[in-house]
Length: 257
Image (tube, rainbow, N blue to C red; front, side):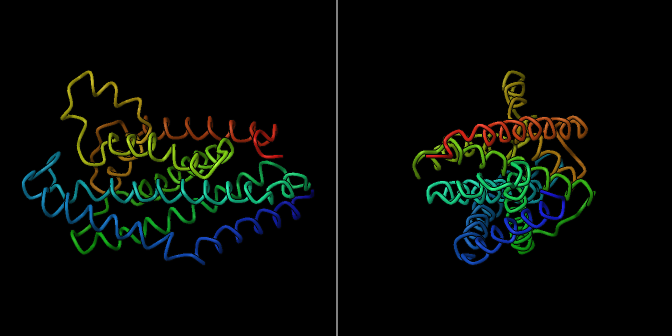
């Protein structure tokens, strides 16, 4: 395929992905806003008043960046795993794989769809947060870059999950037993400075910790982890998952009957 044909194939898949989640917006965009609203009410308004401050900031202000990024993580992951596994289940993915479309274009298009949903959900949740606190932005460039990189990373994670999944039950295993614990233990609700030395070192193995702290730096200007190191770790995980995704696509593992 020449570059124009590749661009056309990429745009076609991206438009399909965006149209898909926008068509069922009641299922893809509304639930994250409602669940995050409950987090704000319970953890922010009720429990937050008892906690007081965290790292020198009102607990609600400390909590908001983590909850926004958590919604981005879930949305980007769920979009790709649901869409790609659905295409695999319906056998339509086989038609795409036998076409001359390069695997890299297929992967990039699905990632873009996941990023689009993740960013849109993040904006919606940010709007919800304005009912509870006034957002002070320290660095817009950091906020935008971290959101996009995070959405890319978890879109790749959803893609890999979809490739290995054999049933719809398999799609929910990783979010339930891997993604959810990593999110809750990734510094969304607390500073890792509250932990002992041993558990701080354990926390450093959690990739979500770097994303949450980098994103929090964009809002508050503080982070439990060095910002440059956080970016390095996020990019490292993206490169690893991207290479793995391309390898799995090339081998067509679990994709063809």
